[in-house]
Image 1 (cartoon, rainbow, N blue to C red):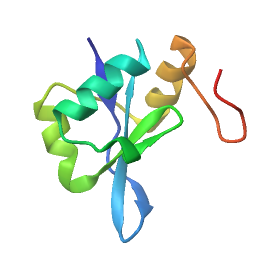
Image 2 (cartoon, helix red, strand yellow):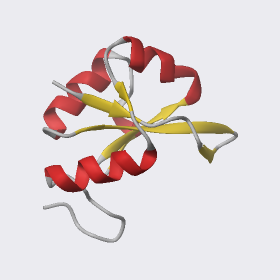
Image 3 (cartoon, one colour):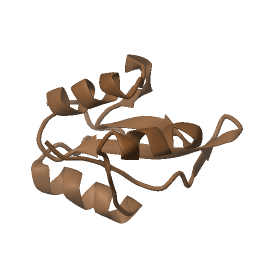
Length: 89
């Protein structure tokens, strides 16, 4: 099981955010997100938005730190990428 997270560098709602993904399945991602306390509403198409104050919690629970570019590459390579404007399969 591998879950990945990029640095909290995305601004929104007065704070910075990370993206947390799986390169295996959405089921794996949802299970990990629940384990670290991410609410279901934080899931957006193919990733969870994680506020900067929860970044260390995700890493401590086993999320692997990668760049934002690597997040996109991993999602695409796994066939799990769901860009805006495209319906889910």
